[in-house]
Length: 58
Image (cartoon, rainbow, N blue to C red; front, side):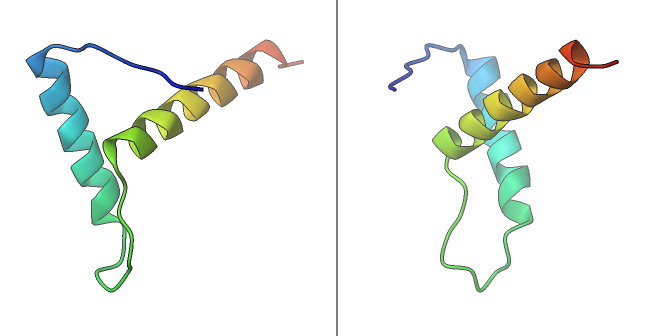
């Protein structure tokens, strides 16, 4: 699935800051880092899981 977003500068700056924060948890010797796409996908999944948990509460 391909998702394209058009966002203003404020959101771009905010997203870049979130990506930076995610990458601070990656060890320095690691051969990977989070991309903006990775972070967006993780945030979407997190929101979905949170909604599912709220809907399925006893």
